Image (cartoon, protein in one colour):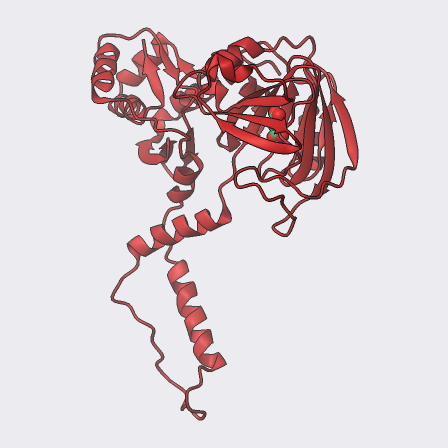
Length: 379
Ligand code: SIN
Ligand code: CO
């Protein structure tokens, strides 16, 4: 499968999803043949000098892990201890890094979070830890040794560091040396510990999964918005009370039945798409940029591009399509569906597709919605 970057992933996708995804790690040696990292360590260091870019340095000093937050200056890169620079959401800034997300386009797009890129000096590491999300660790420059350990849960002991959630016990079980173009897939919660062998860079294609807590809370909010506030617990045909003060099993059965009846009134499930497409950073264009984009669209913009930071998804309903854009949603007639799919697939619309959209009132509203929600830009 070829992504926009022209890179191809050597992987049996069905076998991977059936046997490894969310379940066990997989080393994919030579996952990308002749891999040329789309970003050098120097470019990465340059990016971490910028104010709006989220970056960290983790240093191993005197047997302690020391964390520094960016933005950094060139002096921060002069260290004589083993250190790692981690830059979050590099795909938002570098289109060639964003193109790496296409390697995993057999997994629903809304599950992908961002591409983090790290540089480590010889021996550099972020320490033994577990993450809550799936990740494809693609080796860029140089080599890194990955040790994999136990599956962690909320009882797994952590070392006493305020911000770095490092494991105090790491039960190493497997070890792999990754070379450029190799990928190590890790499911959530598996202990891992990567140590640079010489200087190296790693591209982490990270996934997102909403917390079940948040799903329950969004579901409840949506349900509460439509329930009748004036409906109360009711117990017609009440059985006489025999033991003073008691809440009886039969009373609790009524509670359960009434809650179930309320749950059955749940309407749409749009809260899920809204939650799943929540943006990482404030996505909204300022008023001037929006006005300018609207004018250039009206005057026949040549190109419309999906922003790499855009969280865009959709779901089909009876005769409509619900578009989820950066945490918001709107309903459209299903005439916009081919364009919606094209945009999600190609990350852009060509002049003919823009014209097609503008020739239909629903298409025009859809384009305007995408501009307003900070998902696309026009040129
Ligand atoms: C790294 O790239 O150094 C760390 C990635 C990780 O362990 O999650
Ligand atoms: Co990790």
